[in-house]
Image (cartoon, rainbow, N blue to C red):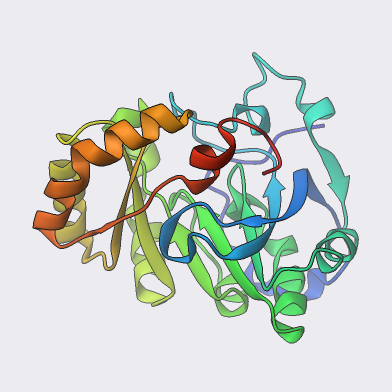
Length: 249
């Protein structure tokens, strides 16, 4: 099974035509659970986690979606048509569908039909993206919200790879983006402020990095007052606080 191209462009003309056919590389589908991050934290949700990502963040908590050195990606993913994914999703009683990864926009041409089906049945669709892939008009029109997690220097990725101005500007102009930043220390907040000023990012959500409840709580306490002082929002990692590193929660 081959990987997906880095920085894949938006397949605007093919989006609608893809329909329920073709295939998505899916790591897991699970729920009902709670959305753990951002403005929808605590909402009942179904999750569709897609496989593959073009970034290699040092603290990534889903390396099984991209790290060939540590995981057999064939065993960690399966091909499903959008119709098959929808059959699984509609069996989960939740009004919010979160499409995450990996990096979902690498497969955006096959996501439009799925997002349209969610919308047609009254379900809200949020797509979680690293903000380094240009979204096409099809997926922009179909989803309700982009949860954009631009990566900071703490990710270990070079700026030229993690910050793609055309993609950031397109997401910002969609008026469907919220901006969520993973921080490891208060010093990271200066970098966020620079990006906010450069691209006019609103609203800003700050989230502590951590894979244990102890780490998350400790870092939240450390950054809470500085985040308040800047007028930003603070989000927990609710799933980590509740279930630590358990997959599928």
